[in-house]
Image 1 (cartoon, rainbow, N blue to C red):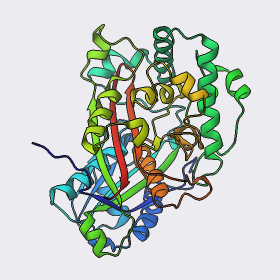
Image 2: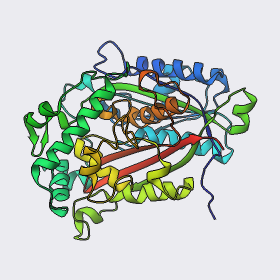
Image 3: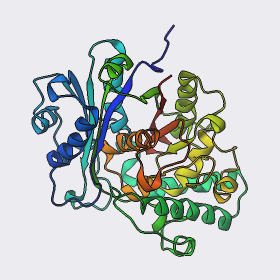
Length: 399
């Protein structure tokens, strides 16, 4: 019987570049920026890293298909380096590879790094991917705002909400994230907005308005992981442990069968329940104390909180408006500003989320530090509501 990875691996150090329109920096520059912070934080030497996992989502516009750019940029010591890509879960996939390698005993110290450079492509959204089954069937007539607007419509219809209440809750999600992002020097967008601005902004795809959308950005983030025993021998205290890592991938049911009603994210429900089981969490609303979720659009965050069992089904609007996910709420969400303020450099986003919870657990989050962080959940969603990939990682104090 599989026992999972709870408390088998700890984070030795993490780093994150400044996110934004980084015209001044190449992908290699961004990797080095994140890595230098990470290795200093870890307190190890480059030659102690025994294997690495490298995440980049749009390789045609960034680093190419191989793992060599990471090895070259960081001058790694001829170690195994694996390139991974799994849509918007790419950063967490790199982390999963490194964590699994250490948990298996294959190596003692491993690196995970994700990077993406999107502003240089000259494209307003995410570049088109190569052809394939899902692309041939759906992508030619699909946009991300349009697809998630359909999620909003399905959610509104199922729970019999009026447009004004849903729009106001979506606006609150964005206002909250912008207020948090102001306090984060590494965020791309650092400006507060008002609820009136969000509600009255031009529609991108009704009911999604301009301020309901996350931006396109450049950035990198990384982690060095090891076993608890090695971390202690290196003199590390207050260890941040990996409690769970789970991935769920759509098999086509949502897009081809009437059993899915379009009002929720099926993969999120499946992956999160597996993660709770692996982490030994039976009461998520009580045990999860902070979250970083995939807020590509404000409606995504609202629905995700229900799918994660952090809000009752159909009550997400009420819980959002009650401030339960604000910085001073019961379960703060996007305390660093989220995708809404960082943008979404695909390969980096998952690791950037873990980085924030790692800082919070170490009491190093500066002006946005939470008073009593205990367990942090990170959620990535790649693709569209009807066809997607969901990754969940949970980190907390080593027991």
